[in-house]
Amino acid sequence: MSKLTKILASVGCIAALGTGPATAQVSADLVKIGVLTDMAGVTADITGKGSLVAAQMAVEEIGGTILGKPIEVIVGDHQHRTDLGASMARQWYDTGDVDVIVDVPNSSIALAVQRLADKAHRLVLVSGAGTTQLTNEQCSPYGFHWTYDTYGMAHGTASAVVKEGKKKWFIIASDYAFGHSLQKDTTAVVQAGGGEVVGAVRHPINLMDFASYLLQAQASGAQVIGIANAGNDTVNAIKQAGEFGITQAGQSLAAMILMINDVHSLGLDAAQGTYLTTASYWDMNEKSREWSQRFKERVGDMPSMLQAGVYGSVVHYLKAVKAAGTDDADAVAKAMRQLPVNDVFTENATIREDGKVVRDLYLAKVKTPAESKYDWDYFEIVRKIPAESATIPLSQSTCPLVKKG
Image (cartoon, rainbow, N blue to C red; front, side, top):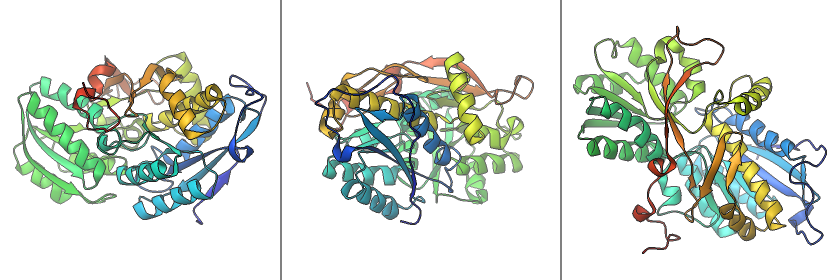
């Protein structure tokens, strides 16, 4: 557990949530939040320290206490190892008095942690992982899928590219649960739009050399190369595609998940014109700009949609604790599903019985260098994708919690 760092959230005057009623019940006289994340690996820039700071900012926003008890935030680095992530989560739940685990980038780890949460009757709010299994066949009454999933990303980005007439695809996907899910959902969208996927390859996570995969894609004759991975893998794949002259030769790239931090690493020259789907953007309105500037002062970058999702998940969890008058997981889970989801980046989202947060997404396009007018001015928001279009219909759900008919 040497990777485990304990951070006590700052305590200020009691704000929006305030103290609870005299009958409030809080286990161990403490509400404890565990940020299980990637502090130094392939997704560290889009989760990691930023996810921790986002959780702290949510706690500070409500004054650092709830129901008259302090709120504590701890962080652990799972290093993209399922065994380590599961071991850390088990210890937090069983002996660490952790009420809720948040973030959890890496779908394989998120699935393992959600199974543990189910057994321990504790909560997990997943922002960083994307697999739809979290709210389908492996759903849990204690699990919430917060920010995005591969269904929403595919239906946003792939459908936009197919509608432009680019219907012949080759997919390069990461070889774990997230990449498998994103490849499957992208393929379904391409085919539904009258296109075809002529080939696909999978690569190990945290890969430095994409040459063999890109050469296969180049030789396939596909109009579009779909990049179905995340973090530094996405950045490396796009950079190396540029080095091979793939786009200059006429093939297009479609990044199935691309964060603002990835664009910052790539630069606008390399990323310009790329379509992407996002759950949030720092420059949407005055509230998002103000929050994001404060975040940037502490982290150095603007928030990714995953980090913004961690903030929102903690805000909503604490609202539910107040509404329930307890940190009991069953009572809080019920309150979370009943309350509308509202925060700096989210307006009137809802939570379904399968644990999916039903929210609007946004189709965006990376600006050209000439279009970008100020620091981090990277995205043009093309259109809103309504929540009902970005979410798997309950009629197609395989979650045992969903009542059929």
